[in-house]
Every structure is written in C-alpha cells, then in structure tokens.
Length: 105
Ligand SMILES: [Zn+2]
Ligand SMILES: [Zn+2]
Image 1 (cartoon, rainbow, N blue to C red):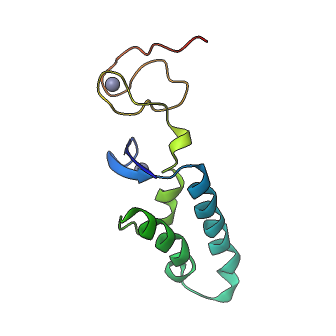
Image 2: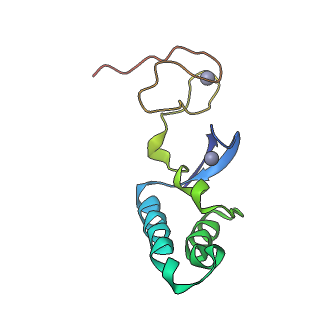
C-alpha cells in the first residue's frame, strides 16, 4: 500500500500493490457471486471495503473506486512535481507537462 495521487479522484489515496490488489479483486468478484443471495449491494461488498479500509485506514464506501487504486496502473512519480505519470508508458507528465526521460537500459 502506498499513498499516491489519483487522477480520477483528484486527490491522494491509498493505492494497492499487486498482492493486496489480488485480494481486493477477489473479494470484489465474490460480491457479484452473492447477487442471488438477495443481500444488498452494501452487504455484498462489505468484505472488500473492510479489507481495504482496515489495510489503509481510509473510509472508502465505493467498491468500484478501489479497483482503480492499483499502483501497477500508474507510472513512477514525476521528477518535477512528484505526481505519478498517468500510465507506466506516459511520455510526459499530465500535471505539469514535464517531459519524461525514459530509462534506456
Ligand atoms: Zn481514484
Ligand atoms: Zn509533473
């Protein structure tokens, strides 16, 4: 887990690493499997929200938001402003316009 700027939420949020994300994604799909149980959406996705909130100390209420809080989806932090590049292959920073120097090795 790592606090990173989220381009969609326009704020810093706790993002999950691959191991944590795999657990969250699994709990998310389990939420769908329980649709026929007649439980409310809130109840079905509670295990996922609990997992994320216990892990991060955040108070997320929207299961869908957690799915895009995945470190792997973003690039490294911009050398100029510190916000992550929007994608791992972005050629410039969308926040400050800094041209990215891609490592060639
Ligand atoms: Zn977000
Ligand atoms: Zn930047």
